Image 1 (cartoon, one colour):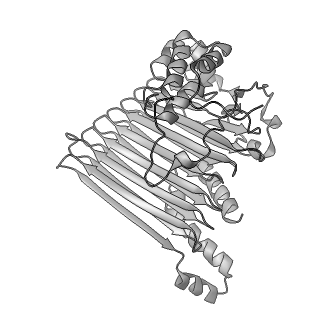
Image 2 (spheres, rainbow, N blue to C red):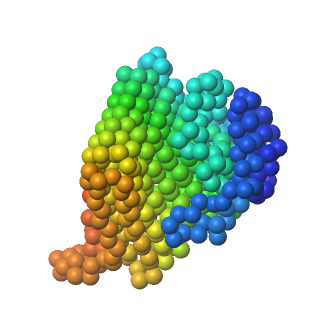
Length: 432
Protein backbone atom coordinates (compact mmCIF):
# COMPACT_ATOMS: atom_id res chain seq x y z
CA UNK A 1 0.00 0.00 0.00
CA UNK A 2 1.45 3.35 -1.01
CA UNK A 3 2.25 5.99 1.59
CA UNK A 4 1.92 8.76 -0.97
CA UNK A 5 -1.26 10.77 -1.38
CA UNK A 6 -1.36 13.31 -4.19
CA UNK A 7 -0.64 16.76 -2.83
CA UNK A 8 -2.88 18.64 -3.29
CA UNK A 9 -5.50 15.98 -2.57
CA UNK A 10 -8.09 15.36 -5.26
CA UNK A 11 -11.63 16.35 -4.27
CA UNK A 12 -12.97 13.07 -5.61
CA UNK A 13 -10.63 11.10 -3.33
CA UNK A 14 -11.67 13.04 -0.19
CA UNK A 15 -15.37 12.65 -1.02
CA UNK A 16 -14.88 8.94 -1.72
CA UNK A 17 -13.29 8.51 1.71
CA UNK A 18 -16.24 10.32 3.30
CA UNK A 19 -18.90 8.31 1.50
CA UNK A 20 -17.05 5.10 2.32
CA UNK A 21 -17.40 5.96 6.00
CA UNK A 22 -21.10 6.72 5.62
CA UNK A 23 -20.65 10.34 6.71
CA UNK A 24 -23.48 12.91 6.41
CA UNK A 25 -23.66 15.08 3.29
CA UNK A 26 -22.43 18.22 5.07
CA UNK A 27 -19.23 16.45 6.11
CA UNK A 28 -18.65 15.01 2.64
CA UNK A 29 -18.95 18.53 1.24
CA UNK A 30 -16.57 19.89 3.89
CA UNK A 31 -13.93 17.29 3.01
CA UNK A 32 -14.31 18.00 -0.70
CA UNK A 33 -14.06 21.75 -0.28
CA UNK A 34 -10.97 21.38 1.90
CA UNK A 35 -9.32 19.13 -0.68
CA UNK A 36 -9.80 21.79 -3.35
CA UNK A 37 -8.46 24.51 -1.05
CA UNK A 38 -5.27 22.54 -0.40
CA UNK A 39 -4.17 23.19 -3.99
CA UNK A 40 -3.91 26.98 -3.57
CA UNK A 41 -2.87 27.38 0.07
CA UNK A 42 0.68 27.48 1.45
CA UNK A 43 2.18 25.53 4.31
CA UNK A 44 2.25 27.30 7.68
CA UNK A 45 5.38 29.32 8.31
CA UNK A 46 6.44 28.97 11.92
CA UNK A 47 9.23 31.27 13.05
CA UNK A 48 12.67 30.25 11.67
CA UNK A 49 11.50 26.79 10.56
CA UNK A 50 11.12 25.72 6.91
CA UNK A 51 8.68 22.84 7.26
CA UNK A 52 8.16 22.91 3.49
CA UNK A 53 11.58 21.22 3.28
CA UNK A 54 10.33 18.25 5.27
CA UNK A 55 8.88 15.15 3.59
CA UNK A 56 5.22 16.09 4.06
CA UNK A 57 3.84 13.88 1.30
CA UNK A 58 3.78 10.61 3.28
CA UNK A 59 0.19 11.01 4.44
CA UNK A 60 -0.80 7.36 4.10
CA UNK A 61 -4.05 5.71 3.05
CA UNK A 62 -7.19 5.12 5.09
CA UNK A 63 -7.15 1.50 6.24
CA UNK A 64 -9.61 -0.91 7.84
CA UNK A 65 -9.38 -1.60 11.57
CA UNK A 66 -10.48 -4.55 13.68
CA UNK A 67 -12.06 -3.86 17.10
CA UNK A 68 -10.28 -5.06 20.23
CA UNK A 69 -12.00 -6.96 23.03
CA UNK A 70 -10.01 -5.13 25.71
CA UNK A 71 -6.78 -3.25 26.28
CA UNK A 72 -5.13 -6.62 27.01
CA UNK A 73 -4.82 -6.99 23.23
CA UNK A 74 -2.80 -3.77 22.92
CA UNK A 75 0.96 -3.83 22.36
CA UNK A 76 2.77 -3.72 25.70
CA UNK A 77 4.12 -0.21 25.09
CA UNK A 78 0.60 1.10 24.44
CA UNK A 79 -1.18 -0.90 27.15
CA UNK A 80 1.05 0.51 29.89
CA UNK A 81 -0.16 4.04 29.08
CA UNK A 82 -3.84 3.34 29.76
CA UNK A 83 -3.71 0.78 32.56
CA UNK A 84 -6.63 1.27 34.92
CA UNK A 85 -8.43 3.84 32.78
CA UNK A 86 -12.15 3.98 33.60
CA UNK A 87 -13.11 5.97 30.51
CA UNK A 88 -11.06 5.05 27.44
CA UNK A 89 -11.00 5.43 23.68
CA UNK A 90 -8.35 3.75 21.54
CA UNK A 91 -7.50 4.45 17.90
CA UNK A 92 -5.15 2.18 15.94
CA UNK A 93 -3.99 3.68 12.67
CA UNK A 94 -7.01 5.05 10.84
CA UNK A 95 -9.87 4.00 13.11
CA UNK A 96 -11.32 3.39 16.55
CA UNK A 97 -10.83 -0.09 18.00
CA UNK A 98 -11.93 0.26 21.63
CA UNK A 99 -14.31 2.52 23.57
CA UNK A 100 -15.40 2.53 27.20
CA UNK A 101 -17.47 5.06 29.16
CA UNK A 102 -18.91 4.51 32.67
CA UNK A 103 -22.71 4.26 32.65
CA UNK A 104 -23.08 7.00 35.26
CA UNK A 105 -21.36 9.50 32.94
CA UNK A 106 -23.46 8.49 29.95
CA UNK A 107 -26.57 8.92 32.12
CA UNK A 108 -25.51 12.52 32.80
CA UNK A 109 -25.37 13.21 29.07
CA UNK A 110 -21.60 12.98 28.63
CA UNK A 111 -20.60 11.93 25.11
CA UNK A 112 -17.17 10.34 24.68
CA UNK A 113 -16.77 8.64 21.34
CA UNK A 114 -14.66 8.66 18.21
CA UNK A 115 -15.34 11.54 15.85
CA UNK A 116 -16.59 9.36 13.00
CA UNK A 117 -19.23 7.77 15.23
CA UNK A 118 -20.18 11.26 16.42
CA UNK A 119 -20.67 12.34 12.80
CA UNK A 120 -23.24 9.57 12.45
CA UNK A 121 -24.95 9.62 15.87
CA UNK A 122 -24.62 13.31 16.81
CA UNK A 123 -24.41 14.95 13.40
CA UNK A 124 -26.17 18.26 14.17
CA UNK A 125 -24.25 18.76 17.41
CA UNK A 126 -20.89 18.02 15.81
CA UNK A 127 -21.61 20.31 12.87
CA UNK A 128 -21.85 23.28 15.29
CA UNK A 129 -18.22 22.83 16.31
CA UNK A 130 -16.16 20.93 13.72
CA UNK A 131 -13.58 23.24 12.12
CA UNK A 132 -14.95 26.28 13.89
CA UNK A 133 -11.90 26.93 16.12
CA UNK A 134 -9.52 25.86 13.34
CA UNK A 135 -10.56 27.08 9.91
CA UNK A 136 -10.11 24.61 7.07
CA UNK A 137 -8.76 27.43 4.88
CA UNK A 138 -6.17 28.66 7.38
CA UNK A 139 -3.28 27.06 5.44
CA UNK A 140 -2.38 23.96 3.44
CA UNK A 141 -1.99 21.85 6.58
CA UNK A 142 -5.47 22.65 7.92
CA UNK A 143 -7.00 22.07 4.49
CA UNK A 144 -5.29 18.70 4.04
CA UNK A 145 -6.29 17.67 7.54
CA UNK A 146 -9.92 18.73 7.01
CA UNK A 147 -9.96 16.58 3.88
CA UNK A 148 -8.21 13.51 5.31
CA UNK A 149 -8.67 13.32 9.11
CA UNK A 150 -9.67 9.99 10.58
CA UNK A 151 -10.68 8.66 13.97
CA UNK A 152 -10.18 11.19 16.72
CA UNK A 153 -12.42 12.09 19.65
CA UNK A 154 -15.68 13.88 20.32
CA UNK A 155 -16.08 14.80 23.98
CA UNK A 156 -19.19 16.68 25.07
CA UNK A 157 -19.95 17.62 28.69
CA UNK A 158 -23.40 19.14 29.39
CA UNK A 159 -23.80 22.22 31.56
CA UNK A 160 -23.23 21.88 35.31
CA UNK A 161 -21.75 18.38 34.94
CA UNK A 162 -18.41 17.79 36.66
CA UNK A 163 -16.55 14.71 35.47
CA UNK A 164 -14.42 13.40 38.32
CA UNK A 165 -12.39 10.78 36.44
CA UNK A 166 -9.95 11.58 33.60
CA UNK A 167 -11.22 10.64 30.15
CA UNK A 168 -8.33 9.02 28.31
CA UNK A 169 -7.57 8.46 24.64
CA UNK A 170 -4.76 6.48 23.04
CA UNK A 171 -3.71 6.95 19.43
CA UNK A 172 -1.16 4.48 18.12
CA UNK A 173 0.05 3.28 14.76
CA UNK A 174 1.96 0.16 13.76
CA UNK A 175 1.92 0.65 9.98
CA UNK A 176 3.49 3.72 8.36
CA UNK A 177 1.43 3.17 5.20
CA UNK A 178 -1.82 3.80 7.10
CA UNK A 179 -3.09 7.36 7.52
CA UNK A 180 -2.68 8.58 11.11
CA UNK A 181 -4.61 11.82 11.47
CA UNK A 182 -6.88 12.09 14.53
CA UNK A 183 -9.08 15.14 15.11
CA UNK A 184 -10.25 16.00 18.62
CA UNK A 185 -13.28 18.13 19.49
CA UNK A 186 -14.02 18.92 23.14
CA UNK A 187 -17.08 20.90 24.23
CA UNK A 188 -17.51 21.90 27.88
CA UNK A 189 -20.83 23.61 28.41
CA UNK A 190 -21.51 26.27 31.06
CA UNK A 191 -20.11 25.54 34.53
CA UNK A 192 -18.95 22.03 33.62
CA UNK A 193 -15.57 20.52 34.36
CA UNK A 194 -13.58 17.76 32.69
CA UNK A 195 -10.06 16.35 32.46
CA UNK A 196 -8.94 14.83 29.16
CA UNK A 197 -5.64 12.98 28.65
CA UNK A 198 -4.27 11.45 25.48
CA UNK A 199 -1.15 9.69 24.27
CA UNK A 200 0.05 9.40 20.67
CA UNK A 201 2.75 6.89 19.78
CA UNK A 202 4.09 4.70 17.05
CA UNK A 203 5.04 1.07 17.59
CA UNK A 204 8.04 -0.11 15.59
CA UNK A 205 9.79 1.69 12.74
CA UNK A 206 8.99 1.68 9.04
CA UNK A 207 8.86 4.09 6.14
CA UNK A 208 8.54 7.86 6.49
CA UNK A 209 5.14 9.02 7.70
CA UNK A 210 3.30 12.17 8.75
CA UNK A 211 1.10 12.32 11.84
CA UNK A 212 -1.17 15.35 11.56
CA UNK A 213 -3.53 15.93 14.46
CA UNK A 214 -5.74 18.85 15.41
CA UNK A 215 -7.58 19.79 18.58
CA UNK A 216 -10.54 22.14 18.95
CA UNK A 217 -11.75 22.96 22.46
CA UNK A 218 -14.77 25.09 23.31
CA UNK A 219 -14.95 26.19 26.95
CA UNK A 220 -18.22 27.91 27.73
CA UNK A 221 -18.89 30.38 30.57
CA UNK A 222 -17.60 29.21 33.93
CA UNK A 223 -16.38 25.85 32.58
CA UNK A 224 -12.96 24.34 33.26
CA UNK A 225 -11.01 21.97 30.99
CA UNK A 226 -7.73 20.27 31.88
CA UNK A 227 -6.10 19.00 28.69
CA UNK A 228 -2.95 16.85 28.68
CA UNK A 229 -1.28 15.31 25.63
CA UNK A 230 1.98 13.38 25.38
CA UNK A 231 3.41 12.48 21.97
CA UNK A 232 6.16 9.88 21.52
CA UNK A 233 6.36 9.16 17.82
CA UNK A 234 9.26 7.44 16.11
CA UNK A 235 12.16 8.98 14.23
CA UNK A 236 10.49 8.15 10.88
CA UNK A 237 7.39 10.21 11.75
CA UNK A 238 6.89 13.96 11.32
CA UNK A 239 4.49 15.24 13.97
CA UNK A 240 2.30 18.18 12.89
CA UNK A 241 -0.01 19.11 15.76
CA UNK A 242 -2.28 22.15 16.00
CA UNK A 243 -4.40 22.90 19.07
CA UNK A 244 -6.94 25.70 19.61
CA UNK A 245 -9.15 26.57 22.55
CA UNK A 246 -11.89 29.24 22.60
CA UNK A 247 -12.87 30.48 26.06
CA UNK A 248 -15.98 32.38 27.11
CA UNK A 249 -16.58 34.45 30.30
CA UNK A 250 -14.78 33.08 33.39
CA UNK A 251 -13.78 29.93 31.50
CA UNK A 252 -10.47 28.24 32.21
CA UNK A 253 -8.16 25.85 30.40
CA UNK A 254 -4.97 24.18 31.52
CA UNK A 255 -2.73 22.73 28.82
CA UNK A 256 0.00 20.15 29.51
CA UNK A 257 1.96 19.24 26.38
CA UNK A 258 4.78 16.71 26.32
CA UNK A 259 6.58 16.70 22.94
CA UNK A 260 8.84 13.66 23.34
CA UNK A 261 9.01 12.54 19.73
CA UNK A 262 12.11 11.24 17.98
CA UNK A 263 11.32 12.87 14.61
CA UNK A 264 10.71 16.41 13.39
CA UNK A 265 7.97 18.35 15.16
CA UNK A 266 5.74 21.33 14.48
CA UNK A 267 3.54 22.01 17.50
CA UNK A 268 1.23 25.03 17.78
CA UNK A 269 -1.04 25.59 20.80
CA UNK A 270 -3.32 28.64 21.04
CA UNK A 271 -5.83 29.90 23.61
CA UNK A 272 -8.34 32.48 22.39
CA UNK A 273 -9.50 34.36 25.50
CA UNK A 274 -12.77 35.79 24.20
CA UNK A 275 -14.59 36.09 27.49
CA UNK A 276 -14.14 38.48 30.40
CA UNK A 277 -12.28 36.81 33.25
CA UNK A 278 -11.17 33.88 31.10
CA UNK A 279 -7.80 32.28 31.83
CA UNK A 280 -5.30 29.92 30.26
CA UNK A 281 -2.26 28.11 31.67
CA UNK A 282 0.05 26.22 29.33
CA UNK A 283 3.02 24.03 30.25
CA UNK A 284 5.15 22.52 27.46
CA UNK A 285 8.06 20.13 27.99
CA UNK A 286 10.25 18.74 25.23
CA UNK A 287 13.49 16.82 24.72
CA UNK A 288 15.22 16.79 21.34
CA UNK A 289 17.93 14.35 20.28
CA UNK A 290 19.78 13.17 17.21
CA UNK A 291 19.18 15.55 14.30
CA UNK A 292 15.63 16.50 15.22
CA UNK A 293 14.18 19.80 14.07
CA UNK A 294 11.48 21.15 16.36
CA UNK A 295 9.20 24.19 16.21
CA UNK A 296 7.20 24.61 19.42
CA UNK A 297 4.80 27.56 19.51
CA UNK A 298 2.51 28.54 22.37
CA UNK A 299 0.09 31.44 21.94
CA UNK A 300 -2.57 33.40 23.82
CA UNK A 301 -4.88 35.97 22.24
CA UNK A 302 -6.68 38.24 24.70
CA UNK A 303 -10.03 39.80 23.82
CA UNK A 304 -11.81 39.67 27.19
CA UNK A 305 -11.50 42.10 30.08
CA UNK A 306 -9.41 40.82 33.00
CA UNK A 307 -8.32 37.80 30.98
CA UNK A 308 -5.18 36.01 32.12
CA UNK A 309 -2.62 33.79 30.40
CA UNK A 310 0.52 32.06 31.57
CA UNK A 311 2.80 30.05 29.27
CA UNK A 312 5.87 28.06 30.30
CA UNK A 313 8.06 26.05 27.92
CA UNK A 314 11.22 24.14 28.84
CA UNK A 315 13.22 22.18 26.28
CA UNK A 316 16.38 20.10 26.53
CA UNK A 317 18.44 19.61 23.38
CA UNK A 318 20.97 16.79 22.91
CA UNK A 319 23.33 15.76 20.12
CA UNK A 320 22.61 17.92 17.02
CA UNK A 321 18.95 18.64 17.75
CA UNK A 322 17.52 22.10 17.08
CA UNK A 323 14.53 23.73 18.77
CA UNK A 324 12.75 26.98 17.94
CA UNK A 325 10.61 27.95 20.94
CA UNK A 326 8.03 30.64 20.19
CA UNK A 327 5.87 32.28 22.82
CA UNK A 328 3.31 34.77 21.50
CA UNK A 329 1.06 36.91 23.70
CA UNK A 330 -1.39 39.13 21.79
CA UNK A 331 -3.55 41.58 23.74
CA UNK A 332 -6.19 43.14 21.55
CA UNK A 333 -7.53 46.69 21.79
CA UNK A 334 -10.21 46.81 24.48
CA UNK A 335 -8.88 43.88 26.54
CA UNK A 336 -8.28 46.12 29.55
CA UNK A 337 -6.78 44.66 32.73
CA UNK A 338 -5.53 41.66 30.76
CA UNK A 339 -2.45 39.89 32.09
CA UNK A 340 -0.10 37.84 29.91
CA UNK A 341 3.08 36.17 31.15
CA UNK A 342 5.39 33.78 29.33
CA UNK A 343 8.69 31.99 29.96
CA UNK A 344 10.77 30.00 27.48
CA UNK A 345 13.99 28.24 28.49
CA UNK A 346 16.26 25.94 26.51
CA UNK A 347 19.08 23.82 27.93
CA UNK A 348 21.68 22.46 25.47
CA UNK A 349 23.72 19.38 26.40
CA UNK A 350 26.11 19.27 23.45
CA UNK A 351 28.11 21.85 21.49
CA UNK A 352 26.20 21.05 18.27
CA UNK A 353 22.76 21.25 19.88
CA UNK A 354 20.86 24.48 19.24
CA UNK A 355 18.02 26.29 20.93
CA UNK A 356 16.30 29.57 20.11
CA UNK A 357 13.75 31.11 22.50
CA UNK A 358 11.58 33.83 20.98
CA UNK A 359 9.25 35.69 23.37
CA UNK A 360 6.84 37.92 21.45
CA UNK A 361 4.50 40.47 23.02
CA UNK A 362 1.95 42.20 20.78
CA UNK A 363 0.08 44.78 22.85
CA UNK A 364 -2.71 46.97 21.45
CA UNK A 365 -4.10 48.13 24.81
CA UNK A 366 -2.56 50.42 27.45
CA UNK A 367 -4.16 49.23 30.69
CA UNK A 368 -2.65 45.74 30.80
CA UNK A 369 0.14 43.73 32.41
CA UNK A 370 2.50 41.67 30.27
CA UNK A 371 5.90 40.13 30.79
CA UNK A 372 8.29 37.56 29.43
CA UNK A 373 11.51 35.76 30.23
CA UNK A 374 13.68 33.71 27.92
CA UNK A 375 17.03 31.99 28.27
CA UNK A 376 19.20 29.62 26.26
CA UNK A 377 22.30 28.02 27.73
CA UNK A 378 24.43 24.96 28.29
CA UNK A 379 24.88 22.83 31.37
CA UNK A 380 26.94 24.83 33.85
CA UNK A 381 30.33 23.08 34.25
CA UNK A 382 30.73 24.57 37.73
CA UNK A 383 27.54 22.87 38.87
CA UNK A 384 28.74 19.58 37.41
CA UNK A 385 32.12 19.96 39.12
CA UNK A 386 30.46 20.74 42.46
CA UNK A 387 28.30 17.62 42.32
CA UNK A 388 31.25 15.48 41.22
CA UNK A 389 33.23 16.77 44.21
CA UNK A 390 30.50 15.24 46.38
CA UNK A 391 31.09 11.78 44.89
CA UNK A 392 28.49 11.90 42.12
CA UNK A 393 29.48 10.69 38.66
CA UNK A 394 29.53 13.18 35.79
CA UNK A 395 26.63 11.42 34.05
CA UNK A 396 24.49 11.46 37.20
CA UNK A 397 25.45 15.07 37.91
CA UNK A 398 24.26 16.18 34.47
CA UNK A 399 21.07 14.17 34.90
CA UNK A 400 20.33 15.87 38.22
CA UNK A 401 20.87 19.29 36.67
CA UNK A 402 18.52 18.44 33.82
CA UNK A 403 15.83 17.21 36.21
CA UNK A 404 16.23 20.39 38.20
CA UNK A 405 15.80 22.40 35.00
CA UNK A 406 12.56 20.61 34.09
CA UNK A 407 11.17 20.29 37.62
CA UNK A 408 9.44 23.71 37.79
CA UNK A 409 7.14 22.57 34.96
CA UNK A 410 6.78 18.86 35.67
CA UNK A 411 6.11 19.13 39.41
CA UNK A 412 3.33 21.67 38.86
CA UNK A 413 1.29 19.39 36.58
CA UNK A 414 -2.00 18.94 38.48
CA UNK A 415 -2.87 15.49 37.07
CA UNK A 416 -0.96 12.88 39.08
CA UNK A 417 -1.00 10.14 36.44
CA UNK A 418 0.24 12.53 33.72
CA UNK A 419 2.99 13.89 35.94
CA UNK A 420 4.27 10.40 36.79
CA UNK A 421 4.08 9.23 33.19
CA UNK A 422 5.88 12.33 31.93
CA UNK A 423 8.67 11.84 34.46
CA UNK A 424 9.16 8.24 33.28
CA UNK A 425 9.21 9.23 29.62
CA UNK A 426 11.64 12.07 30.24
CA UNK A 427 14.02 9.69 31.96
CA UNK A 428 13.73 7.19 29.12
CA UNK A 429 14.56 9.75 26.47
CA UNK A 430 17.39 11.32 28.45
CA UNK A 431 18.96 7.89 28.94
CA UNK A 432 18.49 6.78 25.34
